[in-house]
Amino acid sequence: MSGMTAQAIEAFLAQQFPEVQTPRVLEANGVTARLELEFRTSQLRPGGTVSGPTLMALADTAMYALVLSAIGEVPLAVTTNLTMNFLRRPHPEALVAEASMLKLGRSLAVGEVSLRSVSTSEVCAHAVVTYALPPER
Image (tube, rainbow, N blue to C red; front, side):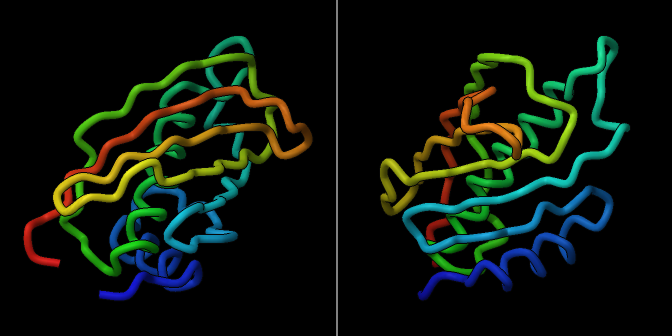
């Protein structure tokens, strides 16, 4: 099965998850993916920093986009593990997620995601994410 394009992934995410903010899928080629999440004040936690749940959701979405770009439209690919390291305070602005595939097997996909504020190259959080892939793809 061929992978999905960035545009198809973005449309798929908006359709499948209408209740959440859909990031822009800037690039997704089966090996890497780059997403951008527009800033909203609702993402802030006390102290004025972007919340951990916002960062974790973006990391998970970036990995899902990467998986879909590698294997195609497989809605039942699911997160089995997400380990997050918060490295520095992100700026209250759009966030960029850059995902790369470490291993794509028959039943698992493992990747890493670096998150940063759009105005800097400094990584604010890093995640390692594992997805379980359904047997029929």
